[in-house]
Image (cartoon, rainbow, N blue to C red; front, side, top):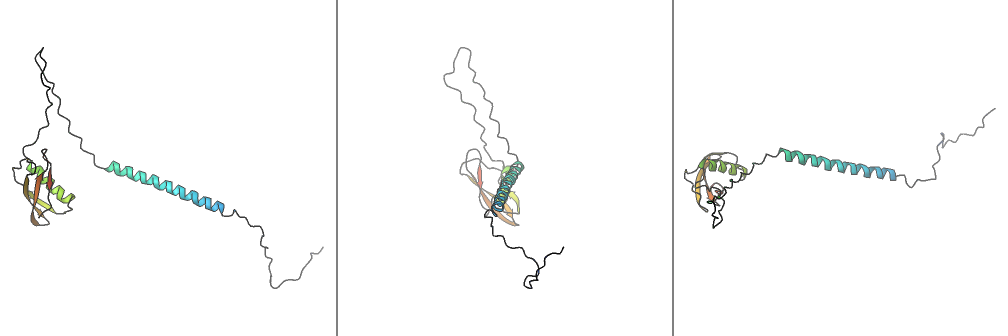
Length: 168
């Protein structure tokens, strides 16, 4: 038995597959769906990573100082059978008469370095008598970057809160 033969075509020496006339219109749909799903998964992973970073930063924050405990309430005592005629007020917290010069000096160094961004703050010296007078201002000397300067400390309330000026 012999196989039928045809004459070779010099323009097409090897057999070539004929192009299919059928075109699948949904050929790109699976690729697009896979891309959308991948983008969604990446977005969710980014949100989760962001939440983890925020949680780590919140846990690394320095612990806040506990609020001072309120002064214990002392009950009013009246003689037996006698009612007090006026209500007894609770004791108010003690207001300082003078600022602590050592605490003020440490506070000045902290404010100058943290709030004003000065790097080399040394030799802070304040007067030893700093009465708590609202609006009262006191001059303190300080050495900033090797240069002697002064700052004004101004008392802002009766509790002894103060502001520190920029060195001049």
